[in-house]
Image (tube, rainbow, N blue to C red; front, side):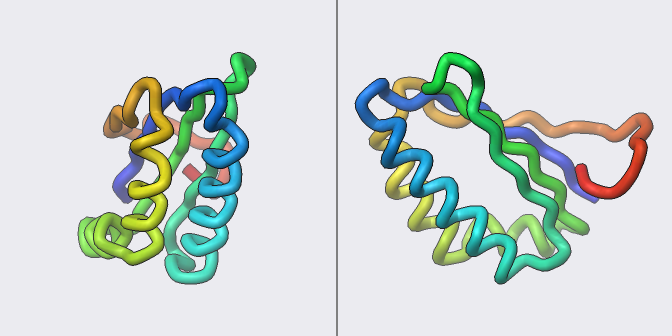
Length: 100
């Protein structure tokens, strides 16, 4: 399992557009990547976001990275960012159940 987080901050006036893009993106992942775990959160400041993702293997991660819905999300998100996404790989130590 490959686990990562993505963190970024959007410009104040772009939050609504970012939220809509996130919703469409996660819906597409749910439909097209049934073995991928993906969840997105908004931080208390309202402009910062963190996404948790887990891919079953490298092939699934690569499929995700090159999928049309991912490219559409990147195209919508990056111009709206005050701080562009940074990605961090995670190593699982222990979990209470399914998911990330």
